[in-house]
Figure 1: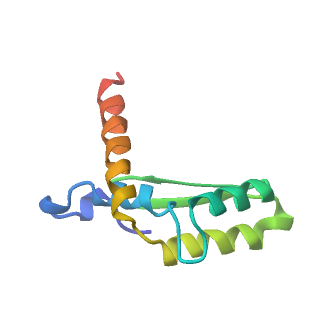
Figure 2: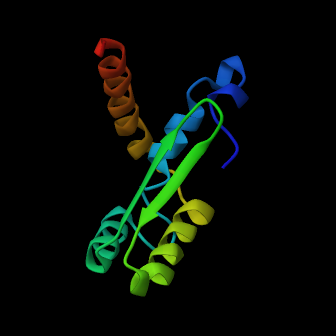
Figure 3: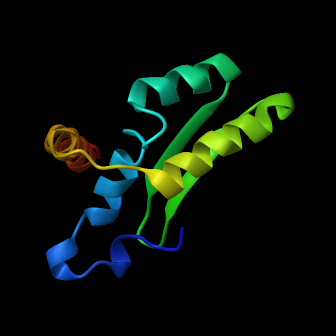
Length: 105
């Protein structure tokens, strides 16, 4: 996705990173645990990271399960829901990530 921290206004600083975390929390058809179970069952993995220029979503899947894994990724990217309580929890995770990044030489 061609959006990263460079695309954020001052009052939106960090929103790309927050959304990158929140997008995996669930959709109308799959909650966090269902997403995790389906991905594990397929022997696949889905992850993401944010840069200044983009937010990257990627999968690792066996070829025979590629379509199923892509379906889950599409559902996550196109239909994610953001729960207020989950957002508050995730803020703490992101703050800790920032602390670790700043502490790393």
